[in-house]
Image 1 (tube, one colour):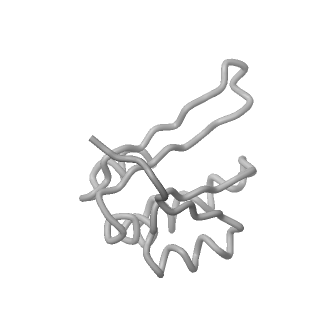
Image 2 (spheres, rainbow, N blue to C red; image 1 turned 135 degrees about the vertical axis):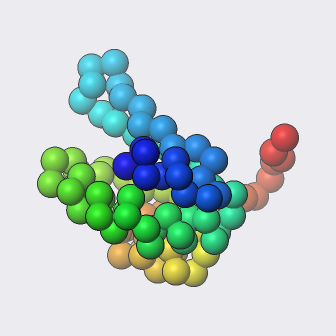
Image 3 (cartoon, rainbow, N blue to C red; image 1 turned 60 degrees about the horizontal axis):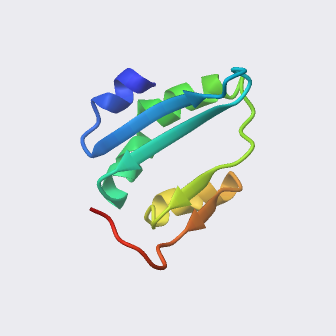
Length: 92
């Protein structure tokens, strides 16, 4: 999944992070815009590898920060994901 995602234009971060006891994992992803995350969701990392991942993992929570675009928001809604939109702050 990492190798495939690394080749996708617009993917700026893709990190699997493990807890110290290696029982919990977080996947933190970053994209340049909604078009990039839509391409990711329609590509092999999600379409091919996520179903395989679900055979050995159980996601407890899926969160999006900023608007992922209508297509991904619709898919995310079927997964019970929560979308957080920017309220106050800044990026550098």
